[in-house]
Length: 375
Image 1 (cartoon, rainbow, N blue to C red):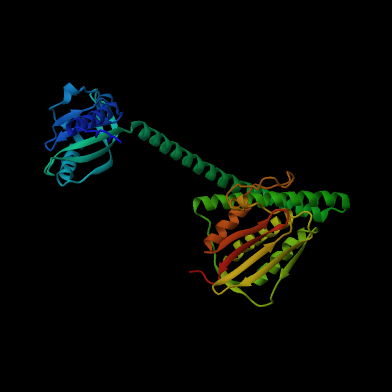
Image 2: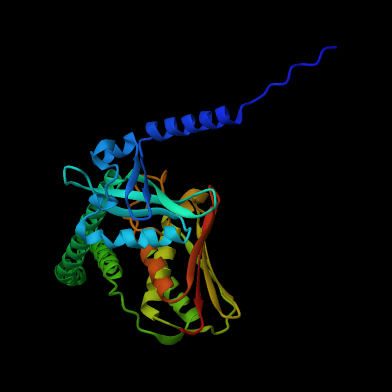
């Protein structure tokens, strides 16, 4: 069997081939690839540099790199050269440079030291990428975001102002309807007055919620702390809700032992009313709602359980967001999606937590925890 002839590779030819390949890569790059001496004199300039800066190779070879720097950024060159002399590499340094026609470019620089055969630093290789378009887009996005925030502030201010202005006439309407209802002798007319009063109360509660949202967004929701037995508060709140609810029985699973906490009594009552009315509203085919209290070492957990529609896992994560309403529920169930948002903010400001455990078609249990004492 004859031996295959050995293929002899000429190292000189191989080196020339590598150099030719690297030169082709440099010439075809859209990025500017420039080399310079430690004194800042340009020694190479690819076509990408010509496209970005506008200078031809003949115009810049032998000239100082400072022709690309705006006057206020001249000091950057000393910093860059100082690091290169130490053999350090500079990566993705974002700065500004000047093109031949005078317009300014936002660029990202990567600068590496060039060493001779002895390992001595003799120059620098610079890759410059034009990021002007990205910077412009970011600036527009920033401006757009600021405009949105400004509009959002104006919207919150308007909601707060409108809600505040609406409260006075609503209070007057409620008072007049109550007087009218008491003075009416005709049962049929009393029924109409009662219905009108119910709707005015609903509108009053809605305006109150909108005003609370405005206070939350502006950071003006104030809490007044006092010590009270949360079991007593729960019983009183159940009586209030039960008075206007005939379709459900609200059961309090109570241990009959005082549970004293330090909190804003009115705001916690607001949370309880919201959770109880929601439990009734979203379980139209059920007849009961169960409220329970669980003692923990550092606080208390209150739970409101219904046997209604339930909530899917993906929607349960969004349920406490402002203006979010669960999809797929009956269209005749009204609401703006702000009640649970307000509950979340109130409980968070009490250094507690609020969450929901739910299964579609089985029901939901809304829980909130409160510390015994505020820090």
